[in-house]
Length: 279
Image 1 (tube, rainbow, N blue to C red):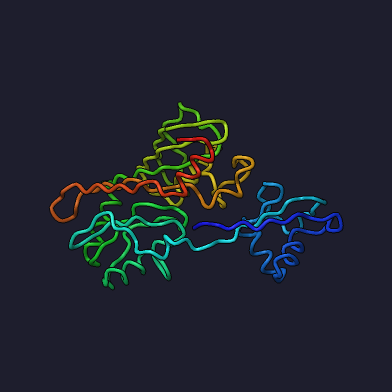
Image 2 (cartoon, rainbow, N blue to C red):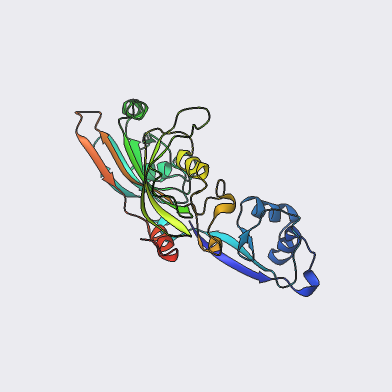
């Protein structure tokens, strides 16, 4: 999902006005709608993400609001990385849910005229990349079993805040009380951010995002787990959490042949790498 920035500057007469009141006035919103913007973490004051409704503005503060704009990519057919008679792997664009109303699953059902198509696993709305689907409900259970038995290799790329130490190779912090393992390879790094390749051997909820937060280097652009660690001066330019499911490898449930799918880094991810002087 791309974003359009709206830019404002507080006048001397608006010193002391709360951020919620300022947004309601300048965007012609109710205070409730202004609060929703703050809750979505899309408002920045002087380059810092602010979500406190009562934040008092000072004269000449700069206020920026990210307004989501549906990119052309979300209106185009979903790209298929692999398919045969019983399953397919799609390259999920950021900004779409895996299943549900308006999801990748729904779009592919319409695109391919396959009403029984079902997602086998999940990617967060703002995570892009390889997503596996079953064309038949009976086969879906076999594919889910592969995930449960850890026969599926999942490799992600992430841009993390700050310089991740090169000696961090495994993160084993439990997630929701369950064992979790993320293997880390640092591809590039500077003081602002790091480009990481990550292999998750377990599939806990938000595992990568929570593991990177646990080492104080959360995913850049992560509104839920990003917190105070994000690179200064760049928050308003980062459209989403920079997390991409790049590789999916699994044995075909009918015959056992190895299926390997690769989803290239999307344009917004590559642009963020460039902006943060990473490769």
